[in-house]
Image 1: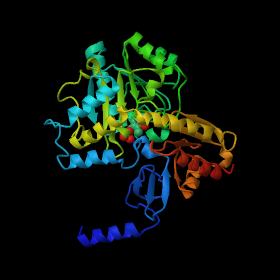
Image 2: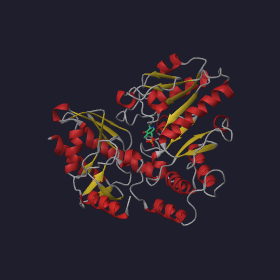
Image 3: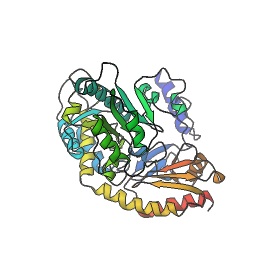
Length: 409
Ligand SMILES: *Cc1c(COP(=O)(O)O)cnc(C)c1O
């Protein structure tokens, strides 16, 4: 392609105010907004309109857009070295791993990039643990998962989703998974066999619509896994790292899983950074050459990840999410019966079920967009509210006013 042709393409795309993306594969149906800048809890579109971001990139932007401490960590590291591969050590990975292991109260960290990769890694580790430690017959290992789950988009992961739009057309799928109802610990107990190596659940289901399991669910899973010699894997990729007012959603029940799967906010809203965190007796089963990633554990990601962990270690984001979450809950509960049929709130994270007479979740999201508020619908009638934790209470109040307005109540 000539420089002239490229220039013409750039001109036509930046001048096209329609926001169309004719060259982008249509695997998403984005709202009609084209973001050009972001700072804190706010983003600005190509026409200079400002929007309060109540999605925070599915909680990857928990610390806000371009948090100065994270940007400083990133730029400082950019001036040194960005990518080495794991063929050699880099001087950022061990400090990051040590800090993250300490935050989790675990021994070891296996760094990856995206959330789906952390889940895939967790599956491999659990299977290897099953064969090498538990003594499961080769090739027989099974993992119990919950219905309504969302663990990512790779072929193995969508294979144990029960969302038809995630699965349909993408088989055949990886065997070895058993799906049980979410929130029902006894269903897990009944599904366990001698071949079961792990239970993999989200402590709160994010994409499912902020589905909070009954109190005691996670504690009971912990007991069952201990009794039956099965690993408890908590996918905290969306629920973890401050969102619910604690470091992990498992903390709400005082439960420590055998394996944490982390991602999203671990990259500080700047880079894809994910990890599996577990003790030596679990993660230690992986031997050199059995698993890896060209980019996983790169110095740039590790520098940003370390900064994100340090910000969480202070507890200030968790406290803020708790306080703001209580405020958000109050505002949302007042809407129940007035265009909202139900709300589920955990920290600064809410699923809001829209009364169908007021429109679909998508329509509400479109009307909020017109009023300067960004949210994303999920499962038809639900909108999810998960602002950057740096948002102010007065900004939440303003967003709630806009929601009240678009609901017509
Ligand atoms: C987003 C998400 C994933 C997948 O993360 P990606 O970075 O999009 O691959 C996995 N599990 C949960 C709970 C998530 O919310």
